Image (cartoon, rainbow, N blue to C red):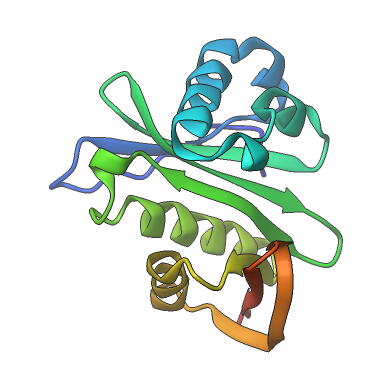
Length: 164
């Protein structure tokens, strides 16, 4: 898992989804740089990750969506002995509501299915489109809302996908 590029194509779309392979992480600077640029354009500075730092971690994987030569989305997930955790999902604003996030999430679900693992994530309670996307991909909310999980006035919800 993670040692080869996985791609999924749909007939109606020129968007490909691929996992940045572990052995190529150090040589994939252009992809990482493009993902970092998208991260900075999308999130406030207080929420921006260092994509290079995240992808250099042994148990962290980057899945990205590409249209032509442009990176239009990404998903970062962590592979632990107990399951997978979706750490961050992002789709460029002009490509939203086209199923790209769902495709990336479903690809992670397939990776989890093959590994016999469940998936969990945390989502901001106010990000209804994200919550709806996760629900459409088979995730369910578990536990109570955690007040100020993301900071003052920003509550977190935990969602899980069970490998059945």
